[in-house]
Amino acid sequence: MNKTILVVEDDSQIRKIVEGYLRQAGYHVLAAADGLAGLALAQQEKPDLLVLDLMLPNLDGWEITRRLRRSTDPTLAGLYIIMLTARVEEAERIAGLELGADDYVTKPFSPRELVARVQAALRRLDLHAEHIEPAQVLQAGPLQLDLVYRTVTLAGETVEITSTEFDLLAYLMRHPGRPFTRDELLDSAVANDGDTFAYDRTIDAHIKNLRQKLGEAGRHNRFIETVHGVGYRFMHPPFAAS
Image 1: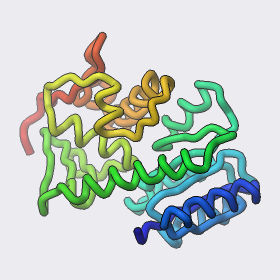
Image 2: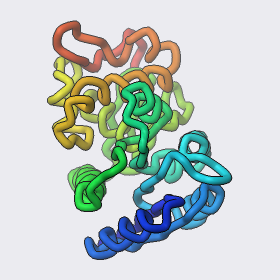
Image 3: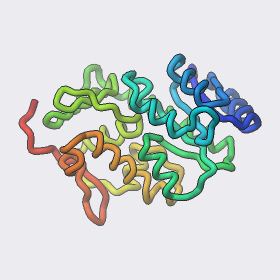
């Protein structure tokens, strides 16, 4: 597969089990037992996906995610992150998604389920790459998505978004004006394990992040509009075409 997965987990037993299952699935696996070492490995090796525990010594998973999402390196800023957390409260999981996580797995978990999540995420990223024509760009007024380089610009300024946020925005932009339910968006643009919680709140968290990152237009719903009783749709804002 030639895909590199970074596992940052301080519990040696869990870390070794996860490493073993991922290697058996054909991935190249890097591992770290604390937050600072994990962040350094991510910055040096630029893995394809990060499996990140929240409660870590030296630097916790929240801060690692925050620093990666603020990185000027688009590879790190858009790195797919699966959080591992022993916290089951809805507010904690929503906070992780809003901070920039793409997915989460609650401890205790099945290593096979985690591998399935990893495979689904990477498969979706590969499919997006395989079906893109060279130099294909989506544009709506000042908002531009380059589907080859997976970059977003707004009025000429780069907007750093996560891999899941990019896929979600690209899917909505491909179907301007069409309303989608949350489960349709989960099936088409976001990894979905059938969790009722994911159905209810995951899309909402990612949409909230996108609106914030798209500035005034995003915060005032001029790009992504809420369709009450249905879900969301992308609306071309009333800007002159660039």
